[in-house]
Image (cartoon, rainbow, N blue to C red):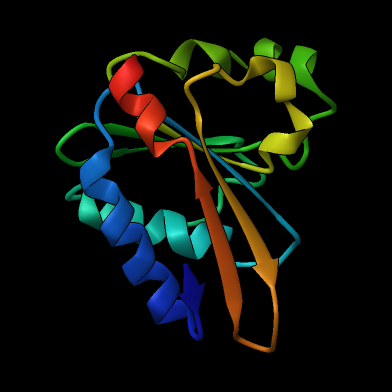
Length: 141
């Protein structure tokens, strides 16, 4: 998928939202400023979240209410899987809500096999390429 603006990135997130249901985990990967949080905002909107979605870099986890609980997790400041487990965030994966994890490459052992992976590549000032893998995994869970 391609995006040429932050608004298009959010719209892509809205297109992914209908595929997600409680227990789903989406693992985002990409450089700083690539658009991970923008896509999360779109997914949240697509799931009926009305609150303003912001990056949880310093809080690690933000929880929102929409059709399902939405857990927005940012692993940027974590030192690895053990640190992630110590935050208690591991308990949020696979439960009654949907977990969207930015900087998921920092916690590879914590991610379930069925996680959807979204890799973002910056290709220009506002241009991005999004590679979404594993949507079909959701049906196997």
